[in-house]
Image 1 (cartoon, rainbow, N blue to C red):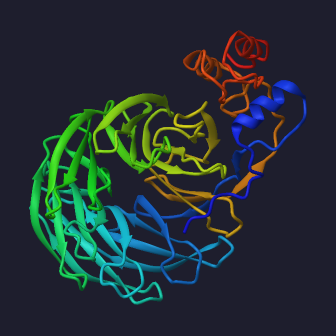
Image 2 (cartoon, helix red, strand yellow):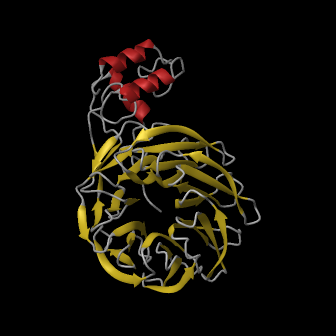
Image 3 (cartoon, rainbow, N blue to C red):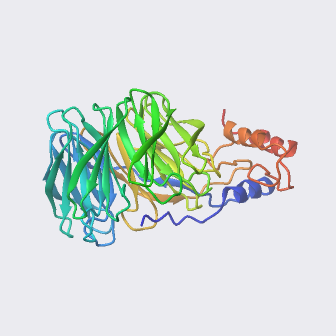
Length: 432
């Protein structure tokens, strides 16, 4: 289980209000990350995940090297230092990988999506329990499929993990059913004309069955497929998701008990947020600027306030983007120096100190790790989203909740959002 950072828990409502009434210095829940530690790779590291592969209680790392046709396993010494453990041959041009206990033996196996035209396939890497992996199956898809990503889920509700793949050039979603022993059969390709590039699974409508969301780069869309309860994934609808969407993440952003979706729209320089109505039907909520080419996105509680925050990798910049959840929406952009471009990002507590760390690959040579740490900053009056400045996002929050009762924008805590709160924002303005 990924632990949230051990910050001094101070909900942003308290911070904004207390600062309006005093000039006390308090610990605000804003994460900070150390400079990147680099692990030089070859052959274009493309995708990275962090899981406990050897069962010793800490998070290890696995990545694909696209030009090396391999998956690479790094083991953690328990203090966050990674050492190369194993290189496993897969098929040509591996891209996405994911972990799951496919053979039900208590340890995590790995599935790898191989993107080459000549070897469009999913490689299954079986774990012996000590993080020694064996490629036990190269499941061939249609030649033109070129799967870019893979996701585990129990499609037929039989207790074992099946797989779906985003077939980038095949314009389809591949469905692979597990026989219960970790051997998969390719049973269907669900039509999708938008060149799907990423796929994630979760129960979107609360019926106990696994559904999926898919981003489609060519059609600038997000597709939703709901499980019909008989093991069939049925296309529900498509949503415009910004220009050239690259990745998506699922999580309950607004705390209403269902899974919402964020999409990294690489061609738009933004992340698009979609809210779930509880039935799996998504509604566009708003867009947030997130660097030059947002390429990978995660949702994690970085500041231990019980809400999922936004972490975004930039494939064309040296900074990652962090936006803290302010109660169902995201606050001002926190620019996090990452040491170079990031084509994929992962979040885990590698060194076991309670603070979430960033792990990312640059698609060329580097695997990087940035250890998380808390930072105490002076609490600024009217900094509603607790991003270190009072700016347009704070003003927008006051105006959007004008006339409401007590809440984050009720800075002076008099029971109503009104002109007094607006005046506090304007008098403490610190950023254009």
